[in-house]
Length: 448
Image (cartoon, rainbow, N blue to C red; front, side, top):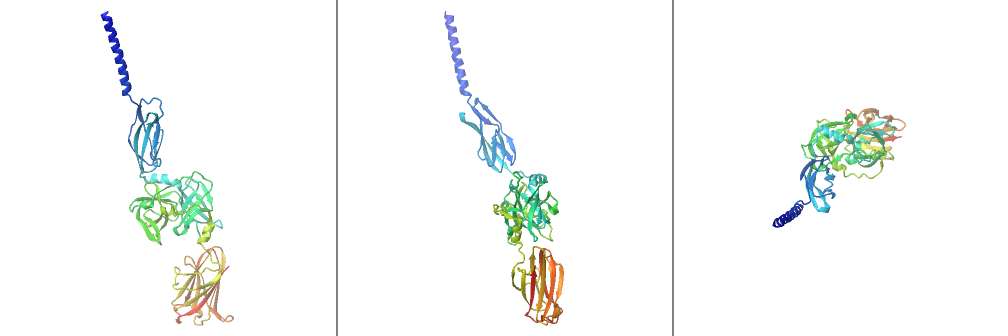
């Protein structure tokens, strides 16, 4: 009997210990969740899968979140870096009020020349400009800034004295679009924003901040020099801020040739920091790009026709009026402008060493008549006037001779001219003995 009682007591103690042990075990294994990494470093565009361990969460749902979706996003634990900065990635079980946090630091990845080219080239285009006669008169480069077809280039790429009316835009993959539209421009800054219709998912460049450009940093220039599409050159920023003709430029040693105009100057992260514009003639590797922040200030919400942009920039001689000589006009660079298609020019020679130069502009094929007269007999055959093209090439000369009917020294020059800029030079033979000052002459210019 005593033995039975002892056995019963032992059994009761064993049962009590079992209950206590089970309760203690249950109390020790609390719900928990923990990320395998608490600090993660990524480059922009890079992704990484985060993992975690959990205890006693049963079937309660796990939730992922980011503190800064502009820097890094997360979906089912896959973190994607978008731009430089930091963000906290949290995995949590809301019903159990438990979580774990990892700090993600995102930085830019420096690219090799090939990596930079592969990243940016799909967004760089070749532009061919056609005038109203359907003749290709200019070419250059551009770059895509919106998926629906906004393309930035130089103003001078899509303007010409023969009035460009449309352009063909060829992408790096060979697809070609045609447009006569622009949504914004600034001629003084040499910028135009074209718009092609149809596409909805074009590859777009990443714009940098030209205010953060440093002298000495490595850069690449992409474009179509001399029409050779898909080209890249390497250099450095020679000077981060050069002022020329009241405009600011980034000077670079990256080679820029004819056809590079409107293409991109990028940094080692593949970000556009400038728009290639021009090179210094006669110098080596003195090339200039418009800072990209200048482009960012150009409104792009209008609707322009390219031919109207041309007509605003290239204003041909028209109307009727008088032009009085304004010294110093002794050279092509200092020539007096003739704005009228029916113009009478009043000029004066200070001596036989004086020479006067005028210029006019036509945007169509025109017949031009120039009549020179003077009543001063001292001039006689010593007074001549000549016609030149925009490059200073001689076209025709006319010497004044006495006209017995008009009773003046007279000469008439007539030429059929193609669109362009032309100069008229008026001269007295430097060898002439006549050297009195203040003698007048007239030129009558008729463009029809």
